[in-house]
Image (cartoon, one colour):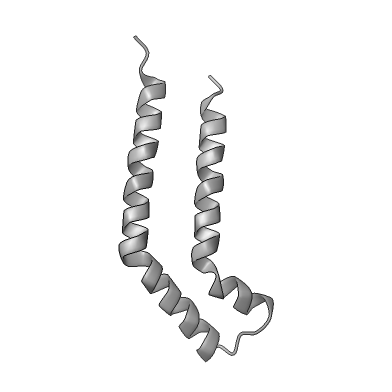
Length: 77
């Protein structure tokens, strides 16, 4: 019996849940504080300030793209 596909999806779901919990509880605040400090102390303006002020959004978008890519690539066997 081949269970490789089931283990991949289950590990993906478990990993996502753990990452989201850790990100929301600990890392999002730290990343937000770091980016705001970098903007104010580094005299960052324009595109750099926009990208730094939305770092948590870019992480969320990267997570969604990564999950979709994993699911797409996982269907090829």
